[in-house]
Length: 191
Image (cartoon, rainbow, N blue to C red; front, side, top):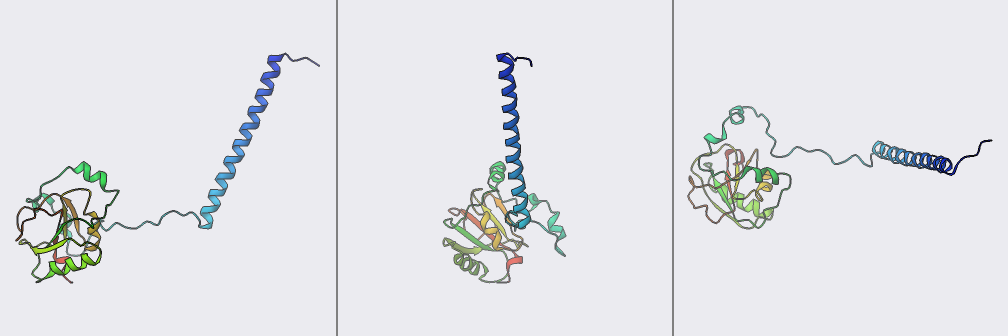
């Protein structure tokens, strides 16, 4: 039998130790992988359910022209604010319970803005006021002065849109001092 040198003996033991450690790591990863697969099959870890956002546009019969209308044609009185900041906050919706909200009625239904103020008050939005808007709107528009608020209000209306800006014309009351202006459209006049 041949004698091994000290260096040869060291490398031989090092190689064996490395193989044993790698085998242990492979077994551990295999066990973790199999347990994750088994959890998914048992229904324990299926992840969150997917729901459609209330902001998803869908085609409705008779409303095709609204899907293809250039928004700049109908929003000449809305001042645009930093769109990058708006996109950055879309993932995180902040509740607007403390915001000053002006609800404007753009329909011919008398008292509609006041009824919407009461409804929003029931949801926790206490600082609301009602007034009129002179240009009829098909769908409700939520217009916020800051991209950090107002997105949570869209869910209460049928097909409502969200914008960042200010309303400067078309209303019977000044919008100064309001954080959010909601223009109630015909789609939400059945209150």
